[in-house]
Image (cartoon, rainbow, N blue to C red):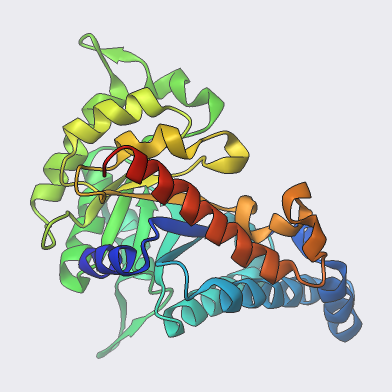
Length: 310
């Protein structure tokens, strides 16, 4: 699957992943009103609104981007009905030939970690049969429990030719409380990055590993160091745009071949119509605003890469 992701990025000139992180206050009133008219102000009504909102954005952008990243918490908050929408969203994105990165940030040990890996990336056995369930192409994994928590994901990834993105240096302001702590004179995130590179050696695609890393756009100097520590690792970069990450700061996340990183934008794309820059589209044309936001993001990142000679 890493080979497919790389090829789609090259074909589209778009190292972009769109975060499908819907919030009710992002969804235009016309969608919410229609869903509530059919289902009432219920969990089912909210989930129908989320689904229609997602579908509109996917339909408007799927030909421009290689991948999407649905954040499962935005669906889990609605319980079982929300997970059904998560599943519908994953399935629909795959129908559109998008690579799906499930942002689940799971991390446990033993049979529990195996169950997470099976549920999201593999097949669950029922009697003599096996069934795919959520069936994302990649998922995000928290490495805090060590190899015991990551190895079960790697086992399933090898079977299914799928991948993971391991949290190394996250974009949130308090990430340094743990991730920047010195261990034997080195920041912890560097040690985690080195381990990610080692895990990746056992599961390689044609040019990059199936084991990627999450490194926030808000820490470009740290990203530069980690790029050197993980030359064959694809880096998923959150924090662009709304969280303050700028394209000019991201060039060091990419290798000299212009590959090696994929930049995430969530509300910067899916709630673009709420920004002053795209206000002329209005709520009715929210999906068109999202499409324009993708085009602008692509031009911004590719322009920065060209300026850097990549």
